Image 1 (cartoon, one colour):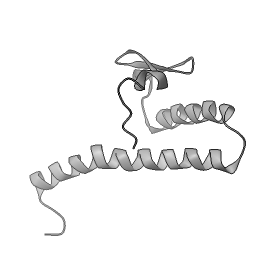
Image 2 (cartoon, helix red, strand yellow):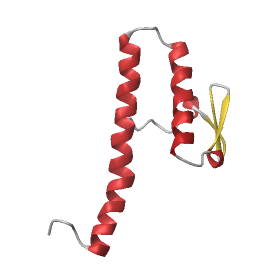
Image 3 (tube, rainbow, N blue to C red):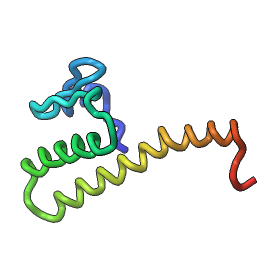
Length: 96
């Protein structure tokens, strides 16, 4: 996951408040995303915006697949794994 410098982040999207962001003129409201399907739709829309700007070639598609894969791994590393570690401390490991 690329940890962008803070000064670069506003160039990627504009944050209106804690519940909405603007991406290339499109507003995404976090409170309107209620389930995994909604989140997948929002992600797909961002990808569609990217595809309109990129050349129609395999390299563009591979770049998007790589970004999605990296985001998946980073979410696991920073969010899911710490939660699982906390639950192991609370309940014990499966393989002790």
